[in-house]
Amino acid sequence: MENAKLHPPADQADAPVEEYAVSHILTFTRTASGDWLLDGDRPEDCNGLAPVTQVCDGPA
Image (cartoon, rainbow, N blue to C red; front, side, top):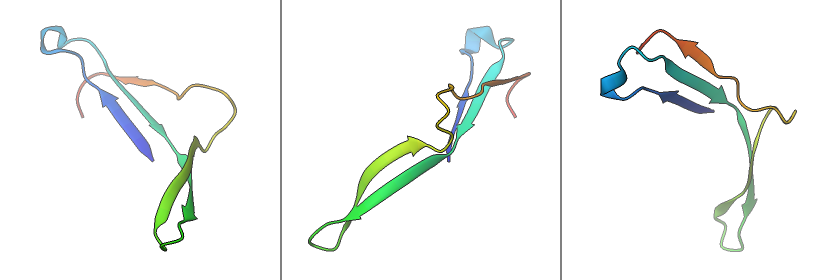
């Protein structure tokens, strides 16, 4: 799960905090030496829409 919270600069303390979360589907392949290698990373909800941004009143 990717989570991000974007806080405004200190001189804009009254600006809203933006936050989003996106689930990812990770695919791995096994190498010849037995290690795992990340082979793919894509959003779980592949409907073509950007992540939903929720605006809140300030830091949680």
